[in-house]
Image (cartoon, rainbow, N blue to C red):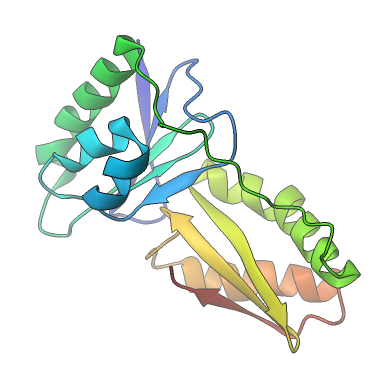
Amino acid sequence: MFIQTEETPNPASLKFIPDGEIILTNGNVEFKNQKQAAIKSPLALQLFEIAGVESIFLGRDFITVTKSDKFEWSKIKAEILATIMDFLVSGKPVMFDEISENFANSEDSEIVKQIKELIEIKVRPAVAMDGGDIIFHSFEDGIVKLQLKGSCSGCPSSTITLKSGIENMLKHYIPEVESVEQVED
């Protein structure tokens, strides 16, 4: 099994792409600590056992690992690669229960549906290439609130991405949008 690694715009995050492997068939999930991982993902739990691992983001065909600033990639990358490879070769399920993001909701207003559609079609594929994701949180009084996950969370360029990229695009297509803000977990 070959696992490709890619740098992300966030220097504390690396994207691991196992060749031909589907990590999650539905949605994505982020783990900020070992306790969250213990409930949902044996793979994430094993990765948290590596000193320096701060968060794990599982996507469709990739795993993004974010490390503590106290550790260098040169010290922990090989152990992360070995852990991912050993786990995937074992055939164990990545998740105890497959996660399903309920992105579309029939109760959403027309504006919220348009916002979600633009995020789904134009934004999420681009940020997934960088090892992260952006999830719609809410829309109220002209303000779109989004949650950043994976390498996007804590990335130095995330504010620029939100304001210059996503906010400008949403304002262009949806006049009711006045600004975009980030929300934390």
